[in-house]
Amino acid sequence: MITEEEFIRVSTYMKQHYGIDLSQKKVIINGRMENYIRSNGWKNFNEYLDAMQADRSGTLEKMLVNFLTTNHTYFMREFEHFDYLKKVVLPWLKTKESNKRDLRIWCGAASTGEEPYMIAMVLVDFFGMEHSKWDTKVLATDISTKVLQQAIAGVYTADQLKNLPEQWKKHFFTPIAGEMQYMVKGDLKKEVIFRQFNLMDPFPFKKKLHVVFLRNVMIYFDDKTKKALIQKVYDSMEPGGYLFIGTTETLDRNSTPFQIIQPSIFRKKEGK
Image (cartoon, rainbow, N blue to C red; front, side):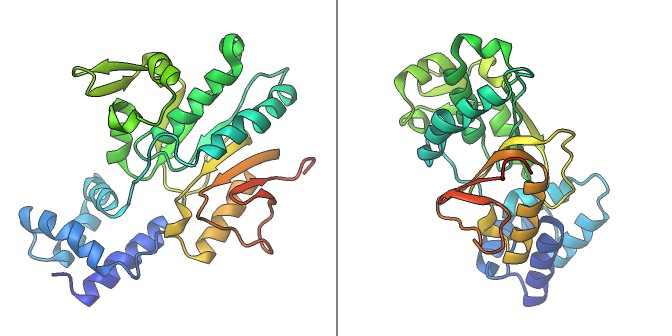
């Protein structure tokens, strides 16, 4: 059982390195990690943490992150965002970027891949025959290497695809295992670039972004961390660019630099 001192050590480490606030999650930390620690021969959490901080390969730290980050997502989640992307954002971008034909879209909490693949499907659907003339690749990042491996594999159960339009299922997925599972087709896989990335690190973008999906990840951050992250996102975006956050999340209207288009959809002012 995790001690109070060990709990503080774990939660402080996650807060300092990843911005994730686990200060009220003692039972969850213990429940997710106790068996792993015991079965791998460590006597207690402190012994594991000592080994993790001495592990130069980073393997033990990746395990910690994989255990303590929650990744719940599904296809068509908060579909109103994808609808808005197709009906409002992409027509604006198609006109704005008609010369360069280079769209820069980032999904900052990729999880097991449903969200970035959804974005890619909307892009293919919107551009149609012109799609090959545009660079619409989606950058998809997550802190957890475990979920990124699942996302790159792109294999989902029939149940996970049940809410997808039938034509999308046929066009973008190949049935395997007797139609019990489906794999993302190669053409769509090529449209998404998966990378491991910690949102607390400096942003590596060489060019400004047009669209950012940062949905259902800031619920793990305190207000100070969230405010700093939103400012980083704002600074990394093109004028007029759009930010999508989870429908249950909020930004402080008085402190956010973004214009509020509707709850969970924000925009950077044009011309700035």
